[in-house]
Length: 258
Image (spheres, helix red, strand yellow):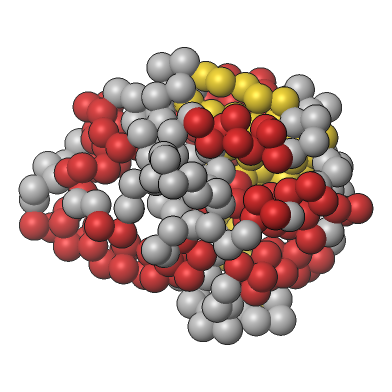
């Protein structure tokens, strides 16, 4: 996978791309995405994958003009236009799933296939979503992964989470990334998406890990109910990071979109 740059109206955009076949746009979650992401590699076996970084992620520039959900949604449509894509499969994970759903609701005639993997964007008072902005690094693996020990190893590349160098890098990186993500996720990720989902006409699959402790699986049923005709794929022994714990199952669910 390669890391490239394109220019939009607001800001230069860094994006990861690779593979061959029908175009697929992947929108990452609040934790970002790397070139060596296993899901991107698996998707690139059948698709030309485009994974733009949200401004403020990785080595991308920040974009103070993107202030709210509508700004960010239209920004991603600007990215689609700059890439010259026509009707790409749109896949979004977590925060990226929220944005992908907004894209499909705002321009329903331009999206025919949509995969939402544990998307944010709803709020159920009886099932509050954990506050990632108030979560300590050592608490994240159990929140994100079915297998917390394996998740910790993946997040730290084998380093000790209490190591000052790891903590410094983690906190600096998170400050940039979550500063951007907070514009749509803080204090809760409800920006009225549920009121717009009726506009989505794309063939849609909702994918969820049965052990998701960040956004509980009850939200999977809420999304399925709000999206006309959406299929629901529940994946056992997987948490919020189902894209890493059960990559093959996620790819199979996306493949069923056609």
